Length: 295
Image (tube, rainbow, N blue to C red):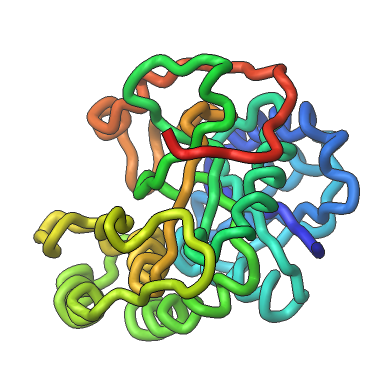
């Protein structure tokens, strides 16, 4: 399967360096996988610093894409997936955002989980980062849980992308093109774009499924859309996956640490409110599971 890893970065060279150190510790698992870096632009982007860190990291890479202007996280990520899936013909993509630091076996576990997930018609995305609500142990290494957690990392295959991409492209065209990401019309997105899709009957996947009709994946934002519902591209991706009948899965045991205290959508206060300040720094050196199970 033609596979690529892509990173998305902006303005945080220190975190990008930590990400690459983590990726370097997974370098033996990168054989046959292309690595692409999408570095957003604008006056505050620090592209030169980030580019130098990438080149000096020792981690092999296929391309460094320096955005000529500030795309914002939404256009940067949608554009990267369009480029890699639609133009370059990759069959599987693994995203790592610049504030997620991969641990040992991060790549190997992601690939193993993604391969296992292909047995099920209703699994749309998988990830090996999670924010467990209680301590986990080596007995939990093969446990997966449905999730609506943030998209700091994930693996997605082209068949799933082809089912959700039109929703993302329409969102981009209507609300992101020519508009600063922080100034997008969130009220219109919620009322005119998200609400009609949220009320539509959800697709039920045919074939072998992980979850059945009696135990469906709940809506990503609760039973109805509230005023506080996010309107970024992560939210639209979650909505598109759910509407098409797909489940997002995460390993219960995290294989990475999220360190983005300060960012476009984060402050120290938000970081603490989300419970990210309480992450345990796990390192798993046990054999990587080849099959997984629900709790």
